[in-house]
Length: 119
Image (cartoon, rainbow, N blue to C red; front, side, top):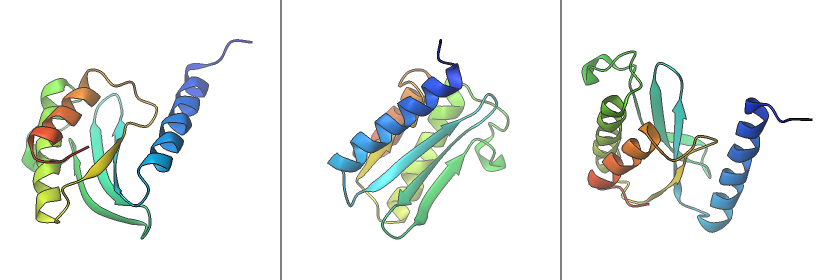
């Protein structure tokens, strides 16, 4: 029986997240979610269960509402890095979920690194 795209996505997400948890215990997690129209990311403290900073392409002040292209992903990554600095966060680990590391996900990661986040 062939695996569906959703099943493969869920397997990939759990594999990525479990490997990262083992290696990066105690660090803040940069979680990324991508839909067809938007992209959003959060810095999450899993120990306390709190979201420390977040950015999304659905925010009007970024000027990319309803877009999920490389330009929008770059702006979201830069904005998240600014918010992380103001929250006092400099290190995290990148949880891409089940999304492949190319295109918009890669652009967001590169922009966050250039903004000062280390992962």
